[in-house]
Amino acid sequence: MMKKFMLVLILSFIVCEGVMAADNGEILTKEESHVQTFMAALHTTEGYEAAKESMSDTLTAAISAQKFISLQKQIQTTFGMQREMKLALVEKFDQGDRLTYVAVYGNNQLVRIVVTFGLNGKQGIQRISFTPIRQDNASHT
Image 1 (cartoon, rainbow, N blue to C red):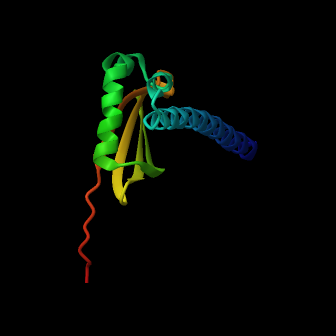
Image 2 (cartoon, rainbow, N blue to C red):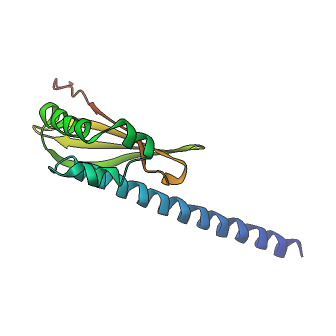
């Protein structure tokens, strides 16, 4: 009897973990879609309207169409054109998620892009930051 109880208990934990993992997977997929939409919008002339779809109300209020155009110019001037971007880190918190990407711009300029979402990614991107990653060109011996 005890063996059956333990088996049922273990199986219920496995099923619960599978359901939670599926939920997290759906949330991550939605969040990554928001990031891809925003990043694509940075490289188009009419990008603000597309970017707004991926931003939270708070971020939309903070970034007007004029500020978005300024952001586009600043990123292109500072880093160049984005060539590649890979998800490097996913952090889950009680109040939301933080996705960290490493992107390659221009002449192999590495940039850390950190994107913050609210709980379950429902409200869109709350914050986004671009930070150059300093590369040590000296060889180590």
